[in-house]
Length: 292
Image 1 (cartoon, one colour):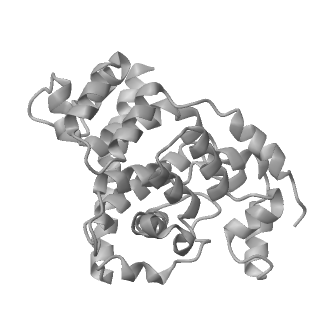
Image 2 (cartoon, helix red, strand yellow):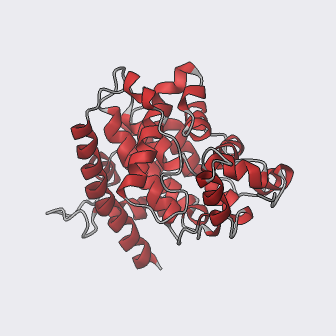
């Protein structure tokens, strides 16, 4: 495969990605802490009128079908949960990244967001089966962010998908990550990690982004979270993907050291991913269109 760009070009492009909104940045910092209080989240949202309006529209949308109108942000956040609020703020703040067409992965508009949201839901559910305590909110947020590097790398990988897939089939490269490095000198996990550092994200989220396809390489103190996102990413691809790299990565079977999951329970996680994805994605999409 012929190299299409240099690592330096891509790192420069990452530096030019806009920063997150103050509200999104604060929410990610707060919800990444094990000991955070829901009041911390409420206080951040209340100081952002646009985010407040968006959250209220989502909780009162047809997708949730509540029997009563929610009129206060406190009640809305209590109903939706910390993880969903952080996801809403992040999705809106970095909408241009999450909803762009992924030409380099032959993915349509919003494919990255759809995959990330499915991964977030799967990571939240997987956290319930952890052999050690794992905060489901942190797992959800890590899932939302894990593949953000694709948004940057995609612009440098146009019309390359067939080359990468041929390379995998012929064993010229081990997986899609190796194909990315062959073509542009960097893969989407490292690109995402560099972007996460630019955004000053908490270390736990940075590690989930950097190692979600190679969880055994993550620092030991973050491996539980990284393995949750690793398995969740594979499950999300199994639940639906329109990108060329779908299921073109290796599953680290050592996830069983961290999670007590049977094949039947994985099937239940997949069912929950599909049901929750439809509800949340429909609510966010419908209210976004209303704003437009």
